[in-house]
Length: 254
Image (cartoon, rainbow, N blue to C red; front, side, top):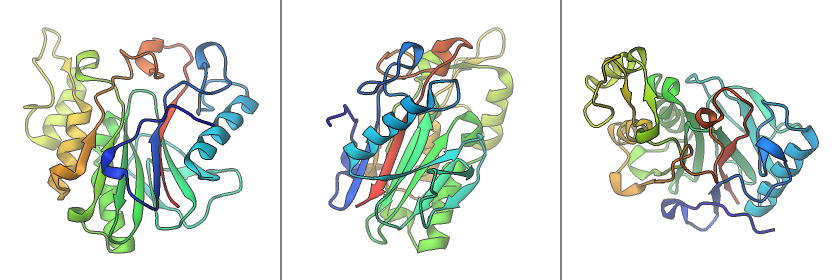
């Protein structure tokens, strides 16, 4: 089955499968139409299971691993796929085991995929603004280094579709957290409006964290698709508090 997966040239390598899904090519209906991969808002379980199966088939990965994402900075090392395909709470997963697809689910947050072609290791990372502030990308890179001997300079990265700065206004408390971490908002947000908020570029923040961790800029690909503006994607913010589905970034060694 051919699904309209978005591919990153940095991850186009033999022995590696990856893709960022859209909402096209599934069986879900209504607000979940059609390739919803999330169980969070009441899409019938049979639909989610079939959608996940289709994604696994399209990528040649029969064992997909989903996490209970909590906007934190915990990283889990995956040495086998659980029977139900779901592990505990975390926002990043790493592995060097072939045939396991690591999944980062999103609906405006940044999905980040990493591959080390030297040690042949991978990571899938979910980085909302809270995860960015908690440096989940750096935590995942550190975990790859400790567990497998990966070096940041060898990593290839893909930052998938997320909400764009143009459509992502945040309040002063979020801006303060970014200032505390980065020292300023230059290149990340602005201008500050009369209520103390501003439009935030979380994708740029994740990119900066990658380069500061030692990933070469030429080895980082960034999607320019906005999940809020482009209705090919699910968007939490566009749903305005109503139910919504989710897409994902998936990566696996084959």
